[in-house]
Length: 141
Image 1 (cartoon, helix red, strand yellow):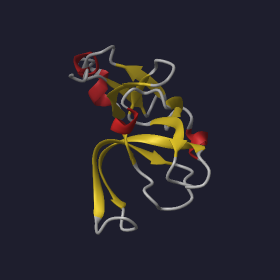
Image 2 (tube, rainbow, N blue to C red; image 1 turned 90 degrees about the vertical axis):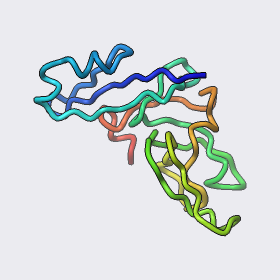
Image 3 (cartoon, one colour; image 1 turned 180 degrees about the vertical axis):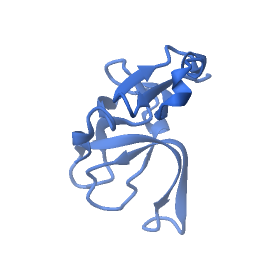
Image 4 (tube, rainbow, N blue to C red; image 1 turned 45 degrees about the vertical axis):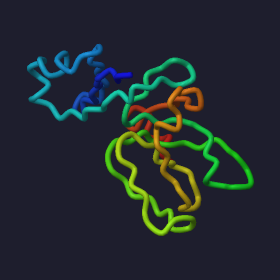
């Protein structure tokens, strides 16, 4: 299965989100794209439980079984892309590298395996987009 490559962009000057309409060329061919300060966000290839496409920078709610082993509660997380290192020394001898799309919990209180691979939510059913880091920054608190 291949992942559709799509982007959206946040115009930092105009404070407005632009969707590429399914093509990076739709963003790259716009003359003003180069003139302004934009933040590109890539499509993860997944949709949330409501069928909405999940992009980098989205704030999502999901069940995090690792923040509190006794109680399973919804957790707010930011969708990120890159390499992150997670301290898994409680049950392994080393750090675990997360490479690709991952969830970074906002409200997890301990450090035990805070990051989650997006592949754990491959069907998107356990994720609900509640905003993004640019249009709803109040959700980061």
